[in-house]
Length: 116
Image (tube, rainbow, N blue to C red):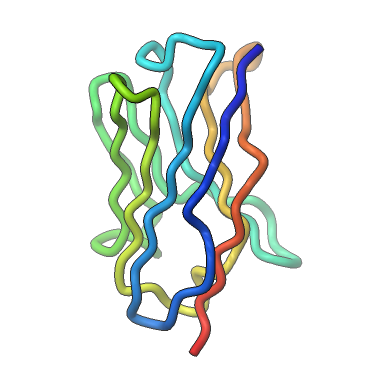
């Protein structure tokens, strides 16, 4: 049974930083592309960043230069380093494992709130 457990969310001030973690179990972590998504109230879930098996990364335009996605295959953990946070970054952040129709899993989500 695949499980993804996220942590690291919370309250940050504008301009501040947070680091999200997503630890996977029940799967061979290194064999799957991973990603971070977010969903703010009244909005659809959107992709924030993704990373391939070969550590190639992509980012949403809104977070380029501020967020960094990293995977540690030895720890079965995906990270999202978020710097220079803005109020519009406030959302529930989800990690995703796998991008195929028959093998995609989501974490439970972690709340990020950016406010002064």
